[in-house]
Length: 230
Ligand code: ATP
Image 1 (tube, rainbow, N blue to C red):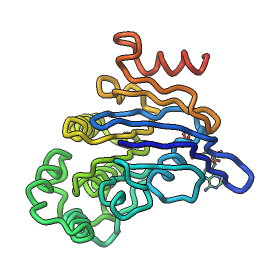
Image 2 (spheres, protein in one colour):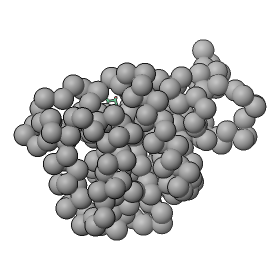
Image 3 (cartoon, rainbow, N blue to C red):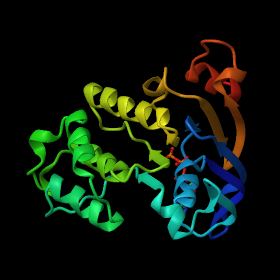
Image 4 (spheres, protein in one colour):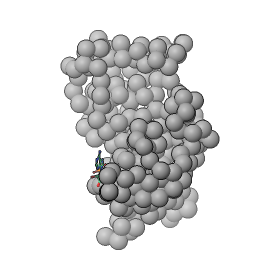
């Protein structure tokens, strides 16, 4: 569960996020949408405790800055940041060591297969295409089976097959009870998968509804344009 109360983030004098409340339940995929500069990435970075901010953020009831909260969090940044001289498989062993994971190899193999990376396991981070780096970044973020997963524009740069693979992974994480917050401009890519829509505009949260509170079959794009008044 993700609970954000009264989140405000200023960069010098500019208010990037303005008194935002946000909630994502267990077993829920929430899409965070809004125009460029609305404050989506800033919100995600604040939830991941990568920024200083005002307000309160709880992850499954834990303060997001605590070690306990960090151990149940997975974060996929907009730009993958791999180690150029580690192989794909070494990245995953490194993450496993960092989190003190035991018996992770079966899940690691499953992820590598699911994301079509098993034949790339010996390639160096620096030798991978942008899309492959993104897929490795996803594997690294979820190897410890986090309960809270933050995706910042996960589909950008992925081919249609990879988008399908990532959607399978998101669904599985959701079905296992995780809370997913996905910032994206590619609304089509989340159709059939989202449970909640959160819309930001100029730093403020202007709309938050669960799918069952909305008209049956209404598409994300329709809701977005309706709320934005365009
Ligand atoms: P996009 O859809 O373009 O990725 P976004 O909704 O993710 O946008 P943010 O990246 O959160 O928006 O930016 C919100 C505001 O904060 C923007 O006005 C941006 O210029 C500003 N901002 C973001 N990062 C910084 C920074 N490091 N320093 C100063 N201002 C920043």
